[in-house]
Every structure is written in C-alpha cells, then in structure tokens.
Image (cartoon, rainbow, N blue to C red; front, side, top):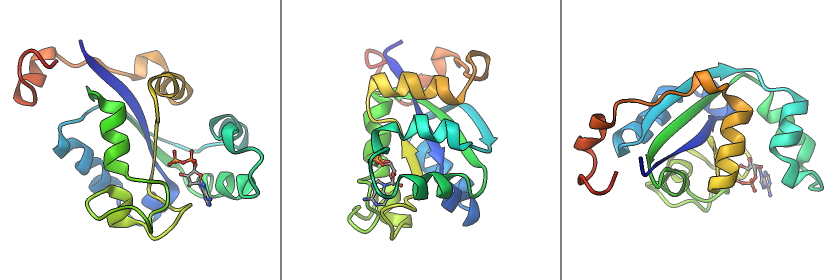
Length: 155
Ligand code: ADP
C-alpha cells in the first residue's frame, strides 16, 4: 500500500458547535477513508505531551484547557499522501488567515479555536496515531475500495 494514515482531532469548538459530522464529511468526500474513530476526554498529561513543542508559549495552559473543555473526536484517516492532503484541507493555524475552501477558512475566526488538529509530518503522524489509538482500534480496509478514488498505479 502506498497510502498513509494520519491523525485528526475534532477540537471541543467543533463538538460544541455540532460540526462533528460536517467536518468528517469534508474529509470523506475528498476521498480520505476513516480507519479509526472515537470520542475521548483528554487529560492535562496527554496534552502536555501532544503540545510539548508549545510548552514555552504563554498560551500553553490556555490551549490545554480549551482542549479539555469537552471530549474531542479522534479520527484516523487513510489515503495516498494523506498527511499532506489533510493539512492542506485544514488550512493554516489562524482561522482568520485561512483561505475560504479550507476547513479553518470556512469555519474559524480564531487562532486557537480552529476546528481541527492534523498531524504535520510522517514522524508525527506515527507518534500521534499511537498516542490516541491502540493498534486494534485502527483498521485496514480492503484495497479494492480504493479503485474508485485512484488510478491503479497510484495506490
Ligand atoms: P497547528 O495546529 O496548525 O499544527 P501548532 O502545532 O503550532 O499549529 O499549534 C497547536 C495549536 O495551538 C493550534 O492549532 C492552535 O489551537 C493553538 N495555537 C498555536 N499558536 C497559537 C497562537 N499564537 N495563539 C493562540 N493559539 C495558538
């Protein structure tokens, strides 16, 4: 398989605004396949690990608190170049700067309340999928399901 798996978190702002289905639909209609899905309450400990690269920022505790304000929905998505495709669909971090057509551009007015988290590279995707899913919670679907989405030498 040339496909990759990547992690998306639907943030509490998305859960509060009843946008869970709508945001998952945007990934599905693009052609990304859901291969793992669950709702979970995050903890300060897990978020300190997940956002370790932001530990010295003044807003570190604030983003962790925002991420704990309701459960989140963790989604594992699979596709060719899925990591890059999902980041492109999400758009840049600041929702006010994100272009219309991107998820953040269409649904967010905020730097912080920006609808989704999406893994940014193959190394982080591998670590983050393990952080949010046990091995048996991630699925491999039959390869022939991809035939409707790709030329036969693409996947
Ligand atoms: P991304 O989620 O686009 O990969 P980062 O990893 O840099 O971005 O930041 C993680 C999250 O922290 C962002 O999605 C956003 O919710 C929040 N964040 C980052 N930078 C800022 C900022 N300058 N002000 C407020 N929130 C921020």
